[in-house]
Length: 543
Image 1 (cartoon, rainbow, N blue to C red):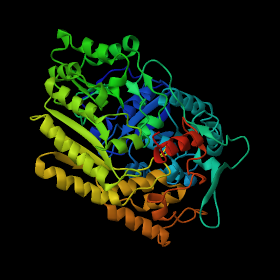
Image 2 (cartoon, one colour; image 1 turned 60 degrees about the vertical axis):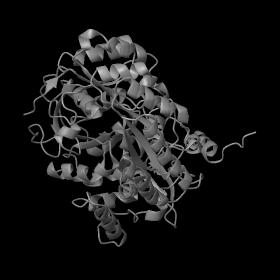
Image 3 (cartoon, rainbow, N blue to C red; image 1 turned 180 degrees about the horizontal axis):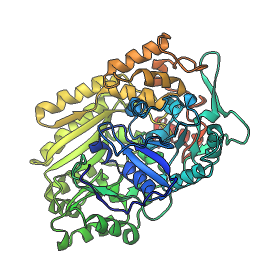
Image 4 (cartoon, rainbow, N blue to C red; image 1 turned 135 degrees about the horizontal axis):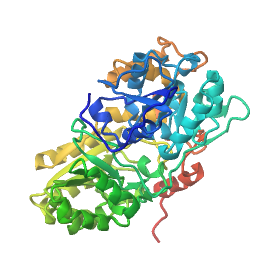
């Protein structure tokens, strides 16, 4: 069915194995490029007590006549409605409260669900919070131990596994004005809070399958670092996945690269800030050997201050055309606000070294609508790009720019989306496009929908259900929201109407507010995050 080369040995499922489906809410080409999805699939496929099949929106493995377990990997907020279509295709009730003893346990994981599963909580029986390395085996063992018990008993048993959140066993309580007061266990013996699980091993993940049909064809992906030491105050990838962890060079990275290069000559080094691995220079030197002459190496985002002529030279020699750096803003003041430890000279040096090393392009990432941002800060971003273009003639520059969206478990989770961002994206286009700088703006409208999903609680679930079929248009989401608010769409019994749009998307929330994800513990406490937010938004006066 697929042109795939596996980098692991699947087990032969034994008689009576758990019948599992692992779904991805997009096409095969996109799903199989997700390292998280690949790793979860291989973890299950290596177990003789699980018979796992895959499912994508355009195809899948041969289906089970009946399954015990239905899993979904979610890495993008806007994919929620697709999950419901996949469940319906498998004849599984979309609402968890409507499933019976013969229906599968529906579970999910991934960054979106770990950050704030609440808008999707009524569709899941279990959510795995955090890193799958420890969580997934513990979850499967627990399920095997109670697989013949009634559904309600299985859910209680699963809730006893560290990092496994069973939404049906928790009840949100609201005040008369619709404000969320608390989320509490529905019965005794259920933990009041659930903590995200963190893998501390010296190996990280790498591809388990290589295929020409992936969105990045024939690539072997190797995770170099997890999390990021920079702690930019809006950044989910940094805060949610703390602490910063690096794969061991000799026991982790080199064996993983060697394994992949037995089947492909395309290597992708992944991580939020790969060049901050303490031995990254050694890894590059190792890849500079003549035996890798036919290998194409690409790296995900690198920290501007770590770009050296050597990095540019080796990447250019190994087939990379460009480097990607996140600058967030051209304004030094804004970079201080978001805790981006980056001087303007370092950005110029990165561009210079990239060109000197033989790379032909530099991709920069920035944001509009950050807290406290003014129009002058956006003008500073445009000026920086134009100055860079003059300083490094011949280097192709592109700026990817998105609107700031607040994310759970970050210091900016209390800040709303700023409507001014839309005008500021247009300002950048007006300044940069005529001067030959490529601008790749993300839609302001879609950022608003993303914020609605990233900051809501369970009352948004009926909107996600109602958006199906029209979720690929902004109007479709807005119509679904209005229909649920007007009572034209049925809500599960006892569920109040959705929270006010303006308040979820655009309001700055008070520090005392009960957050929808308050009962789910990330790496840092609410008090610590508030301290980081205060330092950003009320900086100490310079003495």
